[in-house]
Length: 283
Figure 1 (cartoon, rainbow, N blue to C red):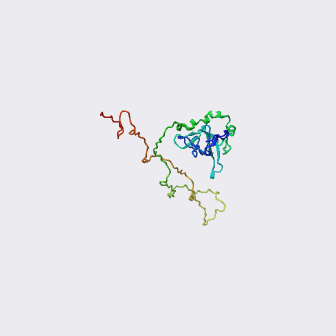
Figure 2: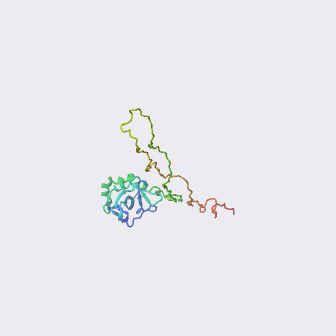
Figure 3: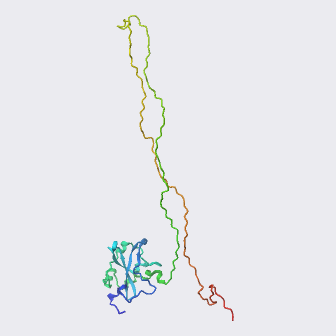
């Protein structure tokens, strides 16, 4: 590749047609970005490469954007602020939230050069000594050349949801009870009292002997029944939760790893079909 001018040394990886990601290093463009609490922040849109050093200095993160991507923007993040997941194809910005990521400088393709880098991030080339540009931190265990085999297993996950198993009916019914109750009542009665009159005690006009009648009204109390509806008690209907147990069963699968050394030769023997070294017989 021809030498580039100083201002051209920070170039998007997509613009370098004959520039390839080094073997063993993943091309993270298109990977999802996660932050604090596994919050999904966006995706890696581009890598900004320092062509002179042969290193990625920044990643371009596409963040935001709702329906149809409206409001989506791209920001520049120093490569050392990111960390690759040890196994999965995802990038972590530890300790950052969506709000934090949106505060990073906005990226405009074709306008990000060394001059703008100094304006946005300060310092000279010595800035790359800062932890924000630490590619070892960015690569993590992937930089060690280790191979990883992920084991999986199925685990039982039980969900509980309410179902109606019946209904309780509380009814109010009318009962008739015959009541007999004694009530004191009053009535008037007539008694006759006779007394002898002394001479001269006769009432005037009482000297005539005739038939006569005296009508005296007699009164009595009569019990009349009135029925009144009154509230006597209140019935409170409550539901209570009764804890019990229910057995659930399922067949779960688990991945295990076995080491097969049958293809390894040793200095003291030859490989057999079972993988156990066999001593050479003397000729």
